[in-house]
Amino acid sequence: MTRAIRAALAVALALIATTAAPASATSPWTPLPYQQAPADNPLKGFMPYAGSYQTFPHSMEWFYLPLRDVMTGPATFDWAPLERQLNTIARRGHHAAFRFYLDYPAKPTGIPQFLLDQGLVTHPYQDHGNNGVSLAPDYADPRLLAALDHFITALGRRYDGDTRIGFIQLGLIGFWGEWHTWPYDGTTRPENWMASEATQAAVLNRFESAFKRTRLLVRYPSALNKDLHLGYHDDSMAFETLPPTPWHFVQRLIDNGVTEKWRSEPIGGELRPEVQPCIFDQPVSCAQYEDYAESVARSHASFLLNQTPFEGPGLTGDEWFRAVAGARSLGYELTVTEAALPTGPARGHAKIGVRIANRGIAPFYYDWDIELTAIDTSGRIAKRWPVPWSITGIQPGATPTELTTQLNLHGLAKGDYQLTLRVANPLPGGNDLRFANTAQDVHSGLLTLGQLTVG
Image (cartoon, rainbow, N blue to C red; front, side, top):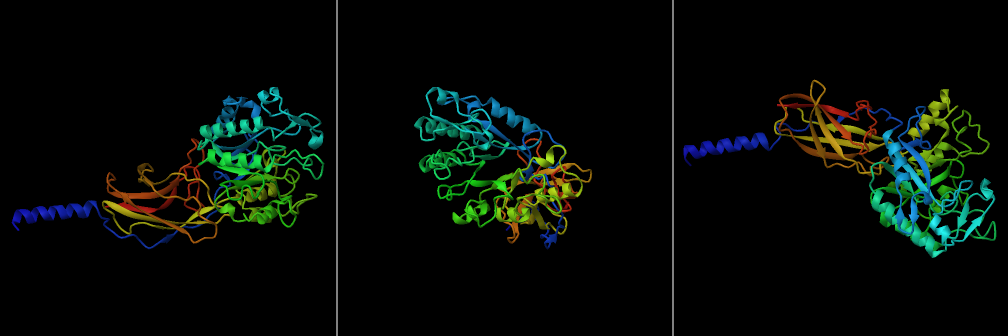
């Protein structure tokens, strides 16, 4: 080997060493201290009916829409009413949760006008304070079933994956879109107005096929939906939730063999209106109620409609703080238990690791983008690295999930940086997911993992 070849080989090996390999090994795992995450973390907690409220922390808003407002013909739609709601809520930095209805007691009918013009049979009733205002449709009419099929398909085609939407409840069937027609159930009253199992299955399957990204919830666990990618909503939380009463929510979960479905599909609902003003009293002053903490723990709910804390007189003093704790207890609480960064100056690449645990009662259900960022000594972001990590489905109480990656340091000047982690909210103006750590900046969304020195 000539001197020239040896020299060239030495240069090549040196170049490889400085560009393809880290200059130092990763350090032992360093613990990151825990601290409660904010109560307004995305896609969890209490939510009000759509409106601007400053009285209680929240990240979502709820609304209903009558189907007739958007469905103008057998296969024609005016999405403007839905767009107005979604845009107004999104401008406040919040996600929307909603459902469409055909029959809402005491409200004008939600049945599309073209179906009424075609002669769809309807049933007037006095129950639930309706006094003949709303109408129960004949769910056996093939024209109605065809309309629902067209609507669900169009809704999914337009809104599946829409970043303004947190969750959609299936609605459409039964009083309030809650999949029951009590007392017109064939037992309490001789008439049975509820949709047949065949019609229910058609609606369930159409929703599942129309939505692949946006998470869906249906009112009751049943044999028809137990194997579908659908979550559930308990609209009588802390009132008709706990076993052993057969129609209570958790008992329905048990009877249908879906007590573990929350691990992959979300649970939501409504804190029963009768207990909203009194469930956080000390002692609880509700005339009838179930233990809130047990109801939440056994249902694994991530979010609940609870209007009382948001409007006057609302909650004050210790009751307000107990309600905040109640909201915080819902859903996920992710914390980075440990982080691993290079022990000394790194050149070319750096191996980074985190371990993430869930101290909540449910996982995070969406796959949001994650990035690492280097913050220089002036507080500016010097470089961002999108990383192929996912926090979706990290289970409560499980061994922390370990995520590692190699960062390309090219383009970073020599010096010290703070390495930070961010789970980015895809909703513009919405809060990023914040970890339960003392090093979490709740405003910027950045969690500081430690110091990265580029040599």
